[in-house]
Image 1: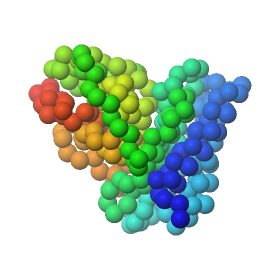
Image 2: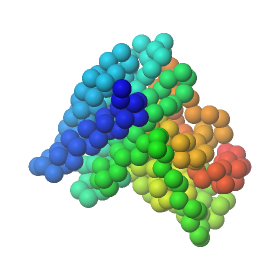
Image 3: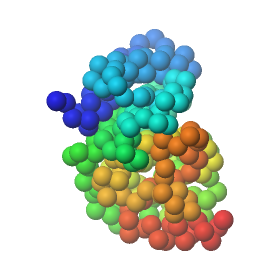
Length: 245
């Protein structure tokens, strides 16, 4: 039987393939983003319904199926995270998220970074690279960097690194492009579920801004803030957030 992580990776790759094909065509901007959202959703559903027909799917691009609140297995999906970046020619910072929630916790997950040709999964987990020498790099939203991230950068004598999608920013820490990702000001469960699962598998610290756990398949889809960082930076980052709150 195909494992859950293989199903997640297969679904993420299917979406990545259709997104890359669309991106090579004549569409651009908002029209490309809308087409990509729909096509990637369809590609992921085809895999999940074929491989795991009894599971519930909780996706950004579908009506919230409230059966998920009593289900044992729920796939939390963002078919195209970073629609704005996807619609801008040449930008690599967008992603596909597929994560399985079961028994109250995130489990198998895959995040595709189609523009760089990578799919990161929970098993085998990516090996976080050694800490880079020099000032800590804090990934932030390129369009709405939160003030709390600026406070963290000041406290750690670090530099802000503006990037696109939440998935790409989270995996930038796992891939060694950044040392932390700090976000506040609006986000949903599908924005972070799969990348957080991969980051946890890689040994990174993941939590809310106040240090509390990130909770998935909650009744309220909103999950508005998070911290993802190298574990040796966690205490300093949370202290800086608390001090600047």
